[in-house]
Each structure stands twice: as structure tokens, then as C-alpha cells.
Length: 398
Image (cartoon, rainbow, N blue to C red; front, side, top):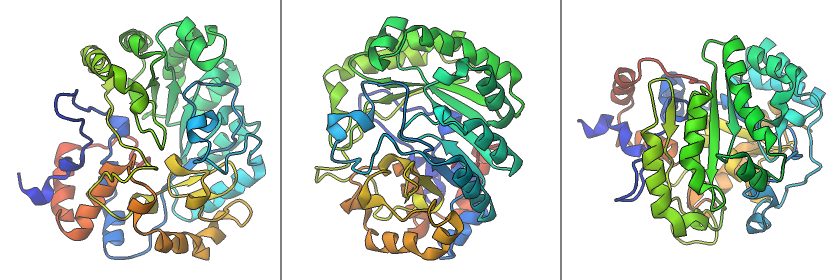
């Protein structure tokens, strides 16, 4: 294959001898290639605005998960702007959505440092986003899906929803979340209801499983339950802290690798098993840099709004003052776009290796870097991608 069209080189890889990474279609790192015109503008040096925004409505949460970054002593110095009481008022979110749409926004994902579905205006905000023609994704712990109104809201307005399961039994779920284990069964039962009543053709519901030393023995059981519940996929990811990387599970990595191999065999045409990168390095307190790129290109296509009202390059590093690019709630998103706050931050922090030693979006950034440098040729890559992926699912969620 011509090296100048081989974008697949950027696909995440585990170390030799470990299980091969295999991401579900919804989490393909190459969806950015479905936006050829936007890429051409960027490569020509033209200004582009993000088409996808990760939105943290609130920092409050109704669970206390053992692996939560925002309540971990491992991250007490990293998320220094985290405040449990942060919450964006509903009307301010609606104004933000107006501006986001006017400036080329196509999709939002509700996620962040808290549980967005406990925000008092969540349903109103979702219906408004739908009215504005903005597609909606949701990352949630699933506990609010016991409410009829919430299920109806998701079914009528959302393109996809990803629910944190993180266990294979009620007992382990309770141990990890410090919440009634019965929620575990309720979440699984809600999946069929969501699928049956969803009104958006591309609707997908999947489960997320953060691998820790508390739950790794239930990887296979969780996969079986996800398939039986008729989820579209189960997505695994290792526990991660900015200064520790995936070190918390390294002592059991061979056993985890073996279990993921067995879980992968449970995949069907209708049910995907997403296998993660198991050896990502630390972001801070390390001299080791991952990734064949020096500039964060990805933050020009995607941005993040924190529950503090500030804008950040991506959701992985929000609520840290070093990454704050100005406040879009106090000033308005349109004014923020025009303010040059982002450009000023970007100029000062152009060398990403100083702040981000490793990157969750390394494949996207490497791909764009190779296009910028000419190592890949855009027209050839776009042609090859079209042949490989005739239809990109959830392409607005790059």
C-alpha cells in the first residue's frame, strides 16, 4: 500500500505480545476523515471552528466511584480547578447552544467531571439542542435512567448514550460505586427499552467498563451481560491517572490481557467488544513523550466546556488552570471565539510535549500531523478512507 495513503498507521497499538486493540465503530479515531473540506481548510491555514463540544454541565455526582479522577488523591494536584459545587445554569447553556450552532457546531457530548443527567435542566437542554439541529451524545452512570421522563428524553433527542457499568455483578458494582447494587440490574434492563423506543436512526447504546483491580475478574461476565442486554457494544478502558498512567493494573496485566482475549470472542455482528490500549504512559511527572506530533491539532476540531464555564482543549485535561482558554459562559461562546483567547493560549502552548506527555487522541493528532507535513497526501487518504468506510457512523462526533 502507498505509504502516503496509509492512515491506518495511526491506529492505537498495544505492545508486542499483548492483545491487539480493536475499537468499536462509534469510537473510531479516523472519523475526522469524514470531514474532508474542513481538513482542507485547516491544512491551508484557514481558521476553523470546532464542530464537536464535550460539555460538563455540573461537577456534582450521585456516585462515588473508586476510580473517579476528580475525587482521587492521585489527581489532587492536576484538577486544581475542580469544585464539586460547579454547575452551569440552564439558560446559560441554552445561550451557549445558540452560539455554538451559529459558529458551525454540529454535535455535543454531555460528560465531564460530574453526572450531567442530575442537572435540573438536562431534559430542557436536550430538547432545545435537538430543536437547534445539534446532535447529542451522553456519557452517564445510568442511574437516572430509572426515570420515565429521562428515558423518553434520551430516546427522542440523543444519537448515542454510553453507560458506565464497571462490574459483572451487583456486589462488585456496589463496592466500586458505593451505590445500591440493584442499580446494576436496572441499568442493564434499561438498554432494551432505550433501543426499542429510540427515534434517531443512528441511535446506539453501549456500556463502558473501567478496568481496575476491584473488577478485572468480571471482564468476561460483564461482556456476556452486555450482549444479553442487547447493547451495541461494550468498551473497556484501563484505570488512568495523569501521573500514574495505567500503573494501577500492571501487576495483573497478563491476566487482564487473557480475559480480554476471551471477551473478544463473544463479539457478534450485532455486538462489538472494544479492546483498549493497555499501556498508555503518564501525562505528567514524566520525561517520556508518546506520539509522533508536537502540536495539538485535535483541539481545533473538538473543544470542551467545563462545569466552571471555561473552555479547554479537550475533556481529558479540563479543570486544570494550565489548560484554561477563557470563559465562554460569562463572555458568551461567540465572543470567546472572536476574543483570540484560544489562539493566545495555543500560541503559548504550541509544543504539546511540555504539557501533555501522552495523549488520549494520539491517533487523531498523528494523522493530522502527517497530513500537515506531507507524509500523507489528503486526497489519497480521503479516497482510501471512503473505500474502507463507505458510511461513517456518528461522524459529527469526531
